[in-house]
Length: 250
Image (cartoon, rainbow, N blue to C red; front, side, top):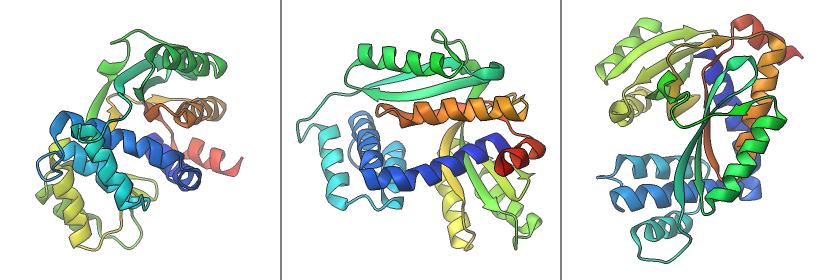
């Protein structure tokens, strides 16, 4: 889980920069549009939409933007038609990667994503080549400082979490996506700050790599995440505490 936590931290920092450029708002709008199209415009009845709206609010996306995206998804307002795609491939060190995309031009995105993989020492695979190595989970990361482990475990397990593990300076919590809201609410109710709170694809068997390979994988993931059509990037990279420390100091 430490690889996931490290990437989530990088994404959080990138998000602040992307929000200034308006880039993040564009990606979040697409996620809201797709969620509303598939599950309707009521976030109380549509878990995927509620999650997308929560992410938008976390970065202070204007209410008008959110409402406009919902209306585009439900067909009340016309707009571009986006297609959902998931690319699968391998990065350096045989690290498996999943890339969620929302695009209005499949052919353009195919070519551009393939080039990003190739430029960074990776290779795009066929459908089904790596997806079996991941499972969809709600993921939370809580700073271990000042938190009693037994108390925290009791709170999250009672709320429906599957597991909780110590990963360096954090406790990493996983749950079924359907229990995400309950676990999130339980942490908030108990005034426990969350460094990470997201629904993600988590690797079933994580891959250990050396520091240089880890850097290459992270560069590939950042390049993919920078693409306008890319919504999420997931890997089964495991950063040992030693490698994470080396990367932080380099």
